[in-house]
Length: 67
Image: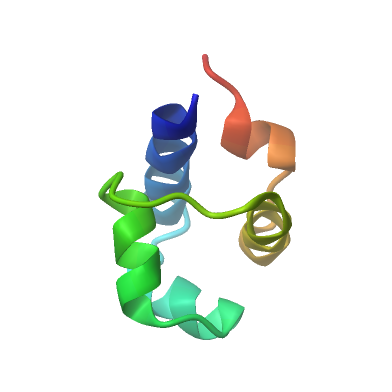
């Protein structure tokens, strides 16, 4: 499931025409951290997933769905 989550973050970023760096700035994170999320090198914790969803204006369900 974690790989699907990370792929969804990547897809939603593309849909929003947003870069990893822009998301990192909005979240107050280092761009390298976001880069690790979208390259499946690392995963965010639940609190961060909620923060990502709010920042991207999508539901947590939309980020974690597997379809």
